[in-house]
Length: 317
Ligand SMILES: Cc1ncc(COP(=O)(O)O)c(C=O)c1O
Image (cartoon, rainbow, N blue to C red; front, side, top):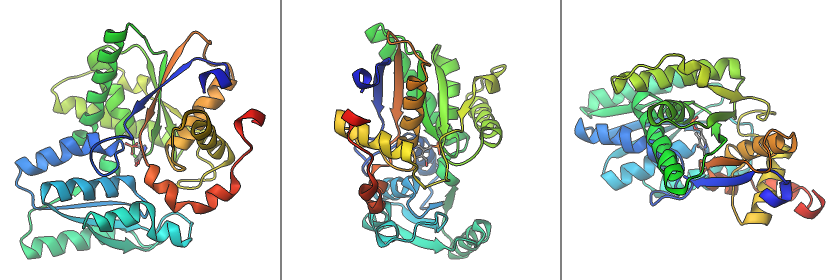
């Protein structure tokens, strides 16, 4: 890839590979979220997401491993109505992990479905934990502060210094944890979050807020952390869960040049942003950029129409 693009060395942190539930960034968040749930003797976990949510799938897997009941409120939010989107990919895995999936209509307010589930669980005497969308609260954010520590350790061990770290950002907790961890552990690289769903003006304050809330949990205070939040919002069109041509090209290039599989909702768009930055001359060829592969690959199998519209091979790209 680096040679093909004629840019910096591209390193990939493989958070898509993990021993739990086919992996992905949510494993790091769930380590903290469910660690606390176990300490609080929770027996039932409820969370929300889109029909093909990776967070929902990994929450289901983690609950299976911990013997917790898992209820998923899955909103039919993305206008893809193919059979694979509705039945395969993450949806198939949710069922396999034994979660109870409840579908929430495209125009139905999620708040209502959540309130109903909460009332029902209270009445049944369950000790339930509600995990927010994407696992993005202060506790979940801690998982990615630890990831930043790992990156810093890797730099120390190898003598490398990354110029920049590129990662997909959606509900904001992953980027927020990295931003916090960067300060905690003295990483020099800037963290660029590639938005998959909304403009920077909306997402940046969320990321800054989560970073601050997670710092509070650690009893730390950092000045100007909001200044560290960089959201690139030029790559999510036509919308959340809907791939574009640059995303298709990024997936195709990584597959054909590296045997590396990206997904059409998150990592494909983040890699498209990195490719655009390299082509735009943002990094010198002597530089090193770290791409965090946040997973999401099971969703690829929900987007079969995607394979019919692959761009040309790398040689002609
Ligand atoms: C594969 C993948 N990458 C990136 C993200 C974005 O992470 P966050 O929601 O913490 O911003 C998600 C979240 O849903 C995801 O599933």
